[in-house]
Length: 338
Length: 237
Image: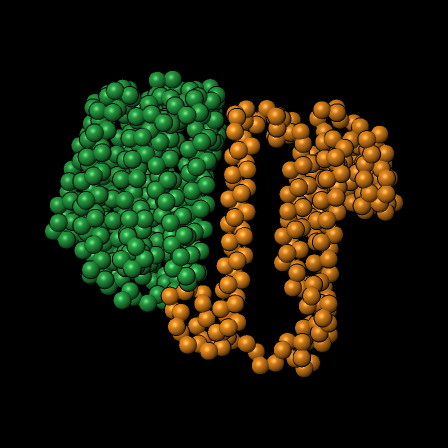
């Protein structure tokens, strides 16, 4: 039973990476879009792309937290106590990001737009970095078991955490660029299709490079996870690499829909790989999944709630994504960028 | 009102400590008055307020009328019940919640009565004034309800199982985190008000013209506002 709930937890993490990650990545491209004049068109695509699903994707984060504290409360308290600095930064970033994105639409002066835009874009990079750092802290065994605090700073300022943070930002940017190629197409802006296509390829290459360098970082700093990735999780690593390379190839041939699927596959495989690599540990080499799990009655309740929530929420989220993809949820008629 | 009554009875049966704080009952007894306002002193006496004889007992269990016994704060160990200032907070919040709830109920009753007999909105300016702030009042009532349930639980976080002090983090930096979060939310709140005011100004200045020169701003004026020709207060009966 604990294994089933651990898988449920990872489904939540993968969904947050795929959907929330793309939102954060859109903020990254907003950040690097250049000055007000030059960045107008890409920013219009960003607005257009994430406006309708604005903040909806944080349901996955809430889901992850609830499952973690209900089913693995010892891990939850250890993680929260040890990593409250990056987690607080992430929470602040999420608040700042959501509100700035909404505020930017309501102001006219370029200077105010720039300020809100900067707050939105910088926090969009800060949040995934912090999340990745948290993952790195857990993977490298820096979170102690027993619901006690580890080191406030070293726990998340270390090679694996920095790798996790940079990789998370790169993955978000990659996913967002791949998604936005299609969004620009729906938006009817061929120039932007090309703009994001080139960036998607660039981001894919950078993400791959970070991941490759990451292997050596893990070898030095998170040996258990490295061993896992090169043994039982190796198939997932290979799938991820194939999907990543495949998405680059499809992007080059302008097969945007296929590139999207493969990009998503690559990310899911990496996250699954992380889980399998640190198996059977929840906190590597100190706390096993089975030791960390709540009593069976609690786990069954979590599972039932998960199934009910899936039945109730997934269709509506699915409808939101589908309508969004078909451009049927228009918040406002925005004039096409000229 | 029905829901509130039912929930209060649930608290009476399951969380007697919280109930004693809500009803300001220092000593266990029957024939307990419902005290409106008033406060608890450190020596366990109640000062001020308007007591309605027997009403708290009657409401707690109507079948026993004023014979219903309500457990007082003195029947719980001192370290397992809210202290004097917490009790006063709970009681005040309770009065605010019930008072506002009753006011809002009367407001609906007012509307209902006028509609029933005259088939129109109440024309009184006071109705419109109260209706205009009723949204804020309902939020205040809701927050007061949260204060009742959370402060009334003290010193427990999980009643009978775990105290707040056992659950709270022992990390450094709680104050820093708290101040930063409070500051961020304050900044966001101020910005929100400023932006709402700017939007309202745009509507006032250009609302009627519909010149469409700010299509770039969502929620900006799009065209003439759809206003009724006759102000509501002058709608003929």
